[in-house]
Length: 153
Image (cartoon, rainbow, N blue to C red):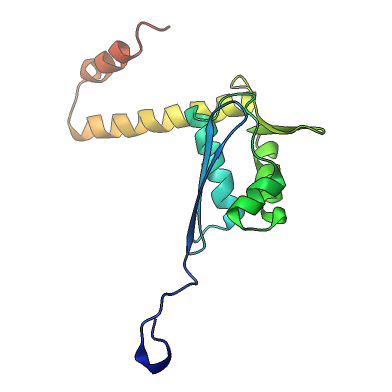
């Protein structure tokens, strides 16, 4: 961006905030927000927390930072963190406990299980499409899946 007298000055309208907070149980909540993203900030927070829950980075019953703490650390409005947490709660990923805060739902939660099943189905569909492009036989597709499952039924 050209400033006064043609001197380059940084464009401060684009910024990214990297956030890491040790949770009560020793895990890390990592959030990266960017105002140049097309997604609203609450959506960026929601999707990143959701991804960390589904990947197991955030463990069940792990306490999340308070609404105010997260807002303060990210230098955003408490309304933004409230919306992100409320949508995560409505989606069944976290739960609020009166007077204690927000916690990750147990992995046995039906909504988390459904999301994980959708992820598995999506990954299987991608694998089957890739196998089709390679003209793999059914046995060639099933054999690696059976080997990596470790004999689970």
